[in-house]
Image (cartoon, rainbow, N blue to C red):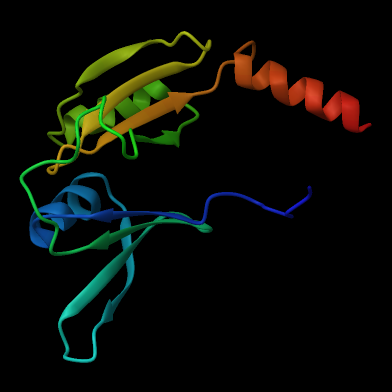
Length: 147
């Protein structure tokens, strides 16, 4: 089945404190605020942040609870942002005062990765795809079979 997909458009997170989340994603990570949508009563419904020109992060205020489900809970486990230079990204995160929960390392799939958590405990992976990684090799096989 060919759905004609071109990528993930956005990831949406329900957050417990929109101000704290904006301070993290917008002010520390540098995601530009693209727009926000309000409900009919004028209250904030969501904030749209730019990751790339075609990929966004939606933040919805009013989340219940203190933290996101743990890594073993049935839920979204994490989201991953790709980078061309993991070391530069890790250094930029540290410089912005964002602690790494996992320092840069080689992942089991052959990609380099480091990890952080947002103020609600959502896990975020930063990945630099390796030329010989499992994903890179799978992409080569798919392209070869399509040719």
